Length: 349
Image (cartoon, rainbow, N blue to C red; front, side, top):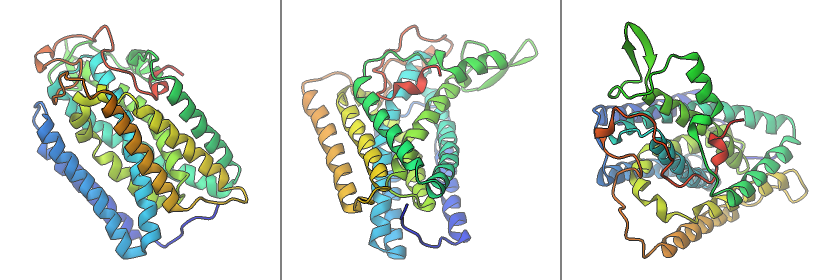
């Protein structure tokens, strides 16, 4: 597979990793207390994360030129678009387990760290496979097309976070108390250390994102197999995921047609990946960027237009979770929120 190739010194990798670590630390310090994150606060932080992600593209432009920069932006945009679908499942998991609003940001913070680790592993493994075995492009491409199809036709499937095989395994291995104990993941009951329901919800988030990571990494590898570009596009898109959740949580009902756009993007990425190993070759980056921007714009615009008369509560709280006053309750009996288009991520294997 022919692809962008440029030397990335070790110190550049170290510097970018340090920047990401510092931003995570700043985010942790800024939200170290358990409080309900409102729309205004989430919108400000979302703006900060998006600005940082876009600014990194300008750094690449000055360092390596327009082709590298535009390739990064294409990867960043498709990862950002796919991350919106994560928000649907986050809302569902929080609703299902009745996670109090004040503790959701803590779960998502550690969820973001897990997401970065998963993606880093998949990036290097996937890129290496595509470089060594050309036929893996056909496998990845077929997987993306199939995922896009499933996304388009499975929007209304029931999703049950407690049935996830990882969640069930953790409950069997780790002693678990089915209630919340403040913002703690673990507590002691009768001298015995047990996991709380907050930890179970974190496991559900991580298990779901594991599947999302496969989808998103495969999609961006269709754009480039340059590990530095794939990693940075993923990292800067995922860093703002927590703020994006709190920013969009009250608006999820208005994104009813977004999954069609995401399905198109995944299928397009699959076709692009397959074509890269045919005489057609890799599609031009400007074309890829254009398809991504138009698809996202149309699907979001279509969703907002279709729900323009929806005057429901679009505030900063998560649908179905209630207030922090429900901290000592067990899991909710229903999902409450619309399931994600990529609902296969929370179903048992």
